[in-house]
Image (cartoon, rainbow, N blue to C red; front, side):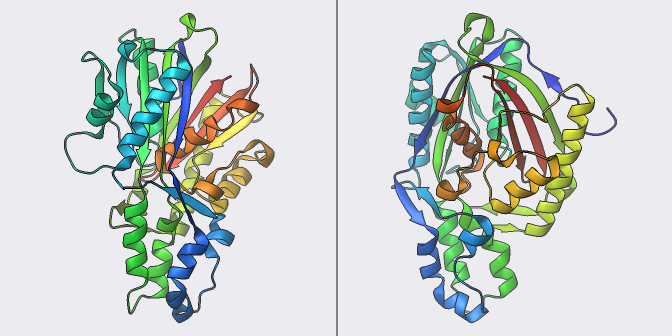
Length: 342
């Protein structure tokens, strides 16, 4: 195609297990307001911006920042147990987290060892901002379709506490400007948690949920609109929203032109960012807001783990044959949409 990437379809892949691990400690937006009280007064800004503008009332953190690896290990083990798949059957384990302690080795090796996967199981990281988990599932599905592996495990464990603390220190320093405050506002919506999914061949698992395919599309001219590390996340909020909405609409239209009709799904499971982000996508694509579950009010934005966490919380309400569209936009910018038939 001249623009974007072609849509793709999977032929024999099912989602067999999905699990979430909740980080143990709640941190409310009210607590952040209390720590930022002097800055807000100096800048003439009201309290409650995180709640009113972003819709984020709270987020979770681990006991220790490094616990995100243990969270991913626990999520992986839980997903395997739910799927009824032995660790020895896994041919591929992909870690998709944004969070990492160091440049090497990969986060995946610690998760691989922690779960006790076999030496035959390939393991590596895929990092693509908040789209990593969906990208990891697509790669795993393609390898299952190709016959290279039978089963795959995709995990993500995220820690946001270090970004939060670094941001709070900067926002309470003397001389902070209103513009600087607003550029870092999004950092305080981030949360911690972990999730995992097991994929396998659909023809061996009629009880599984078919992963049908979808679309990815890039707008990398916007790669400087949101840049982050452990020291903070710096965001052009208006530019990011405008570029993201343009990208989502382009991908939606391209998918429709290539045979995907997503106008009447039973659930639209989105990457969890904020009220503004969710409402903008809802309006742009003409979606029914009643079919869009949200977890960001109590969990914040858990990076690539947020979409599978949200889907895992919908499992009890889903019925056989329901159609789910997983939708995400990641800094960079990239978008992905993947349909699952429950």
